[in-house]
Amino acid sequence: MRKTVLLIIISFLLIGCVSSGTPVTILDDLVCDPPCWQGVIPGKTSEEEVLRFLSESPIIENGLIIRQDTKFGEFEIIHFELNKTIDPNGPTSHRIFLLDGKVAQIVFEWNLGVSLEQAISVFGNPERVIYENNTFHLVFFNHSRGIAYGHNMEVKFFAKWKAIHPNSIIDFIDFYDPLVFSKLMDVNMFGYAIDVESFERESHPWKGYGNILSLYPRGKSP
Image 1 (cartoon, rainbow, N blue to C red):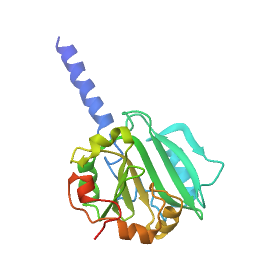
Image 2 (tube, rainbow, N blue to C red; image 1 turned 90 degrees about the horizontal axis):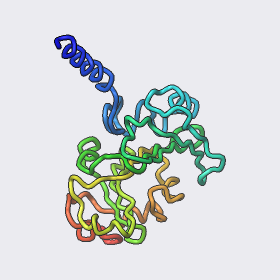
Image 3 (cartoon, one colour; image 1 turned 90 degrees about the vertical axis):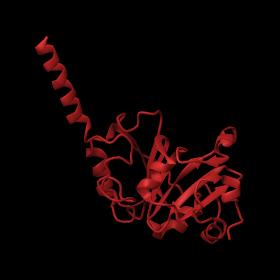
Image 4 (cartoon, rainbow, N blue to C red; image 1 turned 135 degrees about the vertical axis):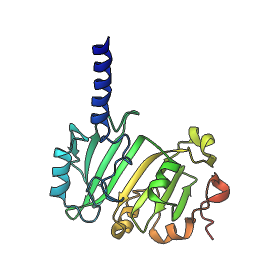
């Protein structure tokens, strides 16, 4: 009996040792401040460096690193997947966009398991918020740092998102180089086919949680 109890205790200790350093979501156990992610910094990390990271990092799913044959505007794209410890919630889509041999943007999409409150606790209050009432995109920006996150709201889900709450789940997080923001906007990277000037005019300062259409109406920024 004592041996059985001892073995159970040892098993729990071993499980704790293995899992303690393993992130549960992409926002856990960050090794650097966003928009840096796992040492990859938009605007600084080279193509060679990011490819080496993807091939060597234990959090990247082996064999699921794909370089897209065609460009997206001026950007080259690398698709990758995280291991199932970090992506336990279902299918995901993660991409790195390259421009002139450097990382321009890191995109995490779908089933991230991250709430709006969790994102704000890591990134701070958003600087700007924009809602697209045609495509149902709601995006929160910390643009000075190169951080965007939010929800791609399909029409059938809109009823759930008439108001935002701390526990509202976001389904994408983007880390980007603010110096190429205009080029990212030109190719509709954040779900908006508008230029930077229109973005500045139509986005809103953070006003907290509540009704989306009342707080962040499209095209009515003060």
